[in-house]
Length: 389
Image (tube, rainbow, N blue to C red; front, side, top):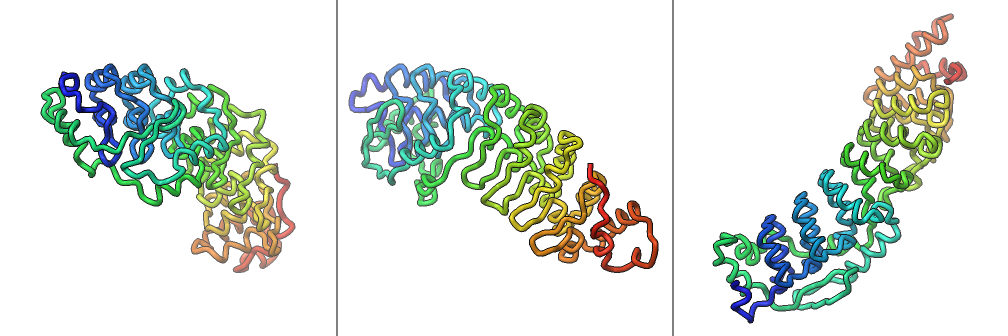
């Protein structure tokens, strides 16, 4: 009613941070206010100076009904906020209902390639935007509002009993939204992670189950780190994520386990597990690989080191014991000619690691002389590895 009586107020006006009345109402999940503004012609595709639309803020907060309302009035679910789609934001927030909703209306978001994400991200952050800039683009791109501030609109809504002054105070406060800084603008040179990468990183198991039902490409890698989903899971010890990927992709097990990160020493998922002492992840991998454990136990990085080399180097004696129990080879040499036991001297847990190797040597090679008790028994391990499974 206030907007209809005051013709000088433009419903899509924004303050110096690019915040419109619709954005502010969506931020606080005011359904009635948002519905009123949308019916009066508010544009749901106007982004603030950071490139965030009302739909994005609703996704980040997990407001399902608000998201449905925005979509109903023409909000574009393909808009990306810092390279992330609405589906990515729902995955990041761990909102299963929202994830199912966006997969139902925009299933192609899950299959968006990194190249498409990079192209959209670069176009949306092509240059810094000043408060006076004005953009009016198509439905597939961001819209920015005009140069006039939202002070008039803020004052009008500030006196409205329905809002209790919430929108008016927000529109005049810069503390609720940070200014665009250089680091945000530099994000145009980076590729945002996919929904699978996000779910694997945050250990959102239920979300990942929903995503895998749509049969996405599981060999995708994060463009910034070069890590695949299972590499990230092994690095962070998310063993349930590892189990999900391997149990639902048995046909491509060899390809998944042999995939290496060319950006980081040519490490495989088991190398990451060894460095981070993720024993459960390694046990799950060993279970699914069965008698073909050599495909991951003998895989070398660019330094010629196997997972056993790295576990010894980092002093993860429990991981070393677990690998030896699986029968991995102990005589494999790296590029410097060193076997795994030779690298144990560089760790603070040297004695624990060497105790594991001594116990293994005694178990598989009964002592025949004084070599069993020598301080540096790695020489006794050379050439005496058992047949690996």
